Length: 166
Image 1 (cartoon, one colour):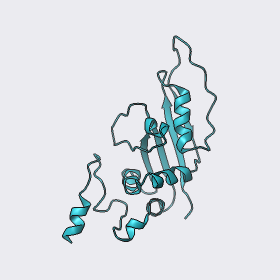
Image 2: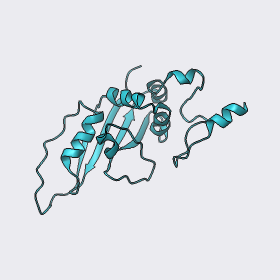
Image 3: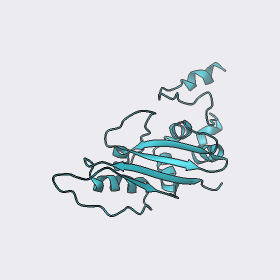
Image 4: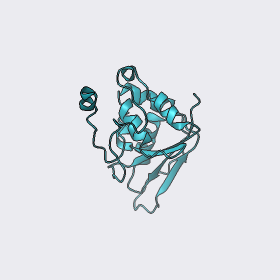
């Protein structure tokens, strides 16, 4: 299945270290062309800047969530705000700096900032399910917004209990 189009963005505030932001982005999205970084000087007079990257390859990101064994969480987080053939979600820049993936809950402010990821494409639901598929789904099938999805506030659904009662 063809990978949908992806756009990522992040806000750089005067208090941020652009070098660290660059490292966090490149850890999960190594093919990004990062803009030139102005060296910080005191006093800081800069305004916030938004970095936007379009047509981002998600292959490394999907491989990393697979390596971290968080595919079910990724399916839930990536599809929580899906509408038609578009979804938007955020991940922690601080976690990305450590080559990890931590999804931000709706309305949550994360220390170190966030990377916003927007994915658009036809049959996005099927792509998300395929991109996050793993062998365990042979025994525990999952799909976007199924009865086992985590709640919007991040609370888990006790899906093992539901499965054992059937």
